[in-house]
Amino acid sequence: ALERTLSIIKPDATRRNLTGKIVAKFEEAGLRVVASKRIHLSPAQAGAFYAVHKERPFYGELVAQMSAEPVVVQVLEGEGAILKNREVMGATNPANAAEGTIRKEFALSIGENSVHGSDAPETAAQEIKFFFSDLEIVG
Ligand code: CMP
Image (cartoon, rainbow, N blue to C red; front, side, top):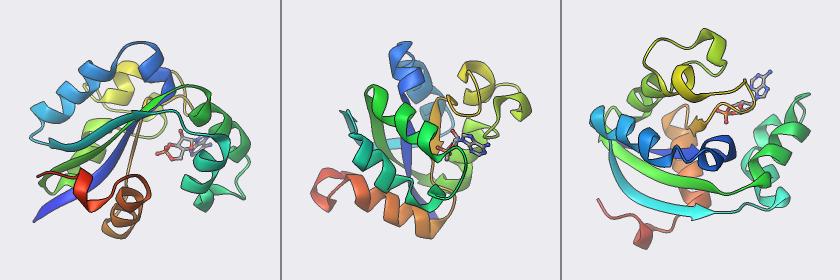
């Protein structure tokens, strides 16, 4: 089915000027950018976005890294977009990421892993709503 998923190009990637290379990988996989903006999250905003991880030992570092520098948030649309996006990203830990994936090519560590993508239809809907209004998404 035609799906939408929320993608974040993280500070480690925007800092290294990798936005275009990362978007190219999504587009080459058949995903379409139907919403996009570059924003600088406050610690409170990053903390709210990752609230599901609040009790995890890495939460503080995650929030600090995600609010340190700008991110590019996008809605990607395509057939099976949620799974397709996850395939193009590769495993969370770049040490486990397959050849050719974004995280294998660009990620620095499990925390600075260059991209975030929604993991399921329910979280995709929630995460898209967190950043975009319906008017900002143009399919
Ligand atoms: P992301 O897909 O953005 O979702 C949560 C993030 O927490 C994850 O990618 C990683 O960048 C970060 N993180 C840091 N340490 C860990 C860890 N030990 N396990 C899972 N995620 C981690």
